[in-house]
Length: 304
Image (spheres, rainbow, N blue to C red):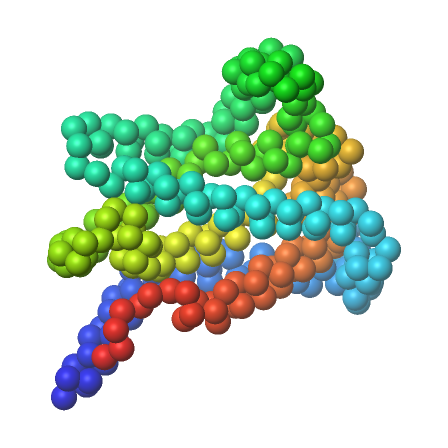
């Protein structure tokens, strides 16, 4: 009887979820389905957005995989960004949430300040950091100047050097870690206080409570932000377009940037569509692997 009741509750929760998601689902079906299917067809054609598409089968895909070095370079740059930026973003977001999950005077002000960068236009944010990272007069190098002098180092060129350009954009992206912080805070505040009280009775300090209670119970939100970070990381474009133009030496020429150039500069809509579908498959495979592994890393409560 108890199992039946639980199953009925789960079905009811799923139904409510579909009802709330229905406006988006209807929008996807009515407004997004045709462009998605059209792009799949166009990926098998040569199409310059002026004349009619010319069907060529798998030729676009063959060219990309076998005769396009920029395809692999842009994909490599994107993978580098994803596999460094996503873990760093998770760590910074968790640390901020832990720091701001305290009941002290004015804590809501600090939470707001850390979240504010997420409502700033990405264009404005990129221009701001372009100035901050400017090698000759930027504030960051001015602050680091004593360290440069101490170790007899030349000032870092940040986004103007191929060796540091990708790291520069990754560091800039950490400014928006307040978005994930809000999600972590919401889940932290949902953790039963009795668990912490029991741990304190057993002599656990703050660190042990964080490692053995807080972090495990936060794994659902950590996993959610991990998946969203992966999807967003593979689509990185605007910051590179504004700050570096894909340079220097194409070190920040990301996959989405190359796809944009294929579409807008080369008028090769067929090739760009093929790249879009390749990206979809890559993200889908990585996401499916992550979803398969989530049962080993995500705490979902006790089995009923």
